[in-house]
Length: 494
Image 1: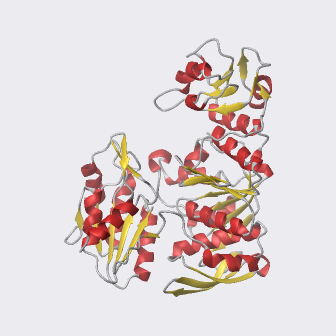
Image 2: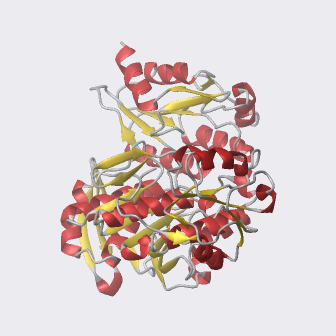
Image 3: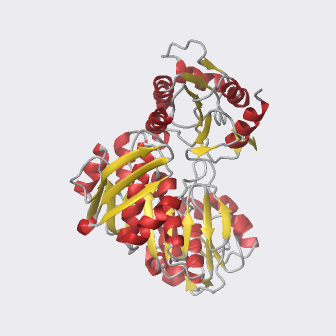
């Protein structure tokens, strides 16, 4: 956990008053940090004991206290699990944790121009593009997202898209301390539902799109949409930029309780929209009309309609954040996509080889549609579905793969605790699979097969894992990077 050099101090009494907690023990005790992991505790910390699905965080309160935690924040059930430690008791631990952490660090996101991006697909790409734009404009920027966290020259691999509130606020405070002018971060629906961004505030919140995903957690699309929509309120942001090319975007633009700026690839009525798009062999040339009649003409090496959506949203946010349109036009041609998002593997082969993170039905459809536009030969695609996740999307993803590719290769992803054969059956039971399309359970073998049958003009797409560097089977994660696997498969092909 990244810590600030500056020391921050708050008392239990102040924290109790902030969140309406009951305090047992000496309320004059002060704490200098907040963490929810007992292994991260440093002397002087307030330990957050969150009730979990299987284990209550209070189980680790004694260990946290032995490492130097001066007090514990938990609920009534957690408070019964330990003694002799000053305790703040609340009904909603996550809500209180976010508010206390933000208060302790003096609300760091408000001292930077902070931008939160949410949506099913595109969060990572929009965040990455924005980070590059701000840095190119000489504005030091912090980045928090699915792939990594960046603070100045420090690059930290991410374990989740949006950190828990204590870690998030500490990261933001560290960025402020290192004089970051901007913070760009991805805000997941899980983070919103689990209140990881409680206490956070964004100058701009942006919405990319919404399609079926994470229903193992949200249960239905309305709950999923409601989680995303909660970001677009005065509690969390001052301004909304919303892509209205989906029905959910239109709904959100109509119901958001903050000023809304609309973005669209297809609708000229949107504040930010494409006037013209000309596809080229290396990407696209385009002109964009924006707020106040701004006209930006430029070109990009990114390809695919949904990447143009991502680029348009990033450009709109950058302009609304004060980047000059002329400077934007000069920077855009040099922008690169996010790791594992339509990332090419180039080893001199006669066909295109690409790795992408697409792991929802809509994302699979979009990436295959994009591939069709730049492929003169066959589209050969490899895809699996993750275990212990939304099972309802498996047949939809299978259908998207089958319909969108010339040769569909169904394989394993991260099966976790499930049998790969069961997942594959759920993906393919409604499909008629004929050679050369096939089911190859072992992902390594599936990638090798895809490379072995590719020829000049074809495109090989390895979908689902993107930037991930491991494969999880029965709780064990072994090294597995689709980019490396695909490169080795290309080299192994005569």
